Image (cartoon, rainbow, N blue to C red; front, side):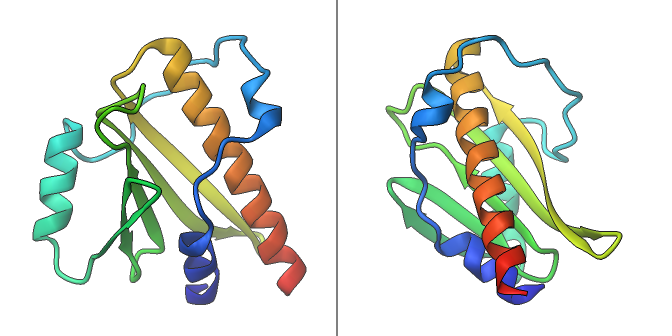
Length: 133
């Protein structure tokens, strides 16, 4: 599982042409992030032992390797700022999945676009991980 997490962290964030064309609103989901705000999440993770920080394409990426969790914080100037995407790599029935939770403070359209980008990224990452098995 740790190798899969490392593969996930090394994939650069990108905008997928397939997700850019979709504009119908996404349904809202119950927030499962344990922090009350994006700044609180970043501060909490900075104080947490064992977290690994990096910057990729201006996004702050925080990895919790022991929990198989990756946090992606949008940069200032991004249409969704301040926002965070929490992706958890989990195994269910022998298959690897990426659960995703989002706290987004941009417009509905900007947040939906970001979520679609991460869904696309997660699907491609899962497919790549499965092909490596």
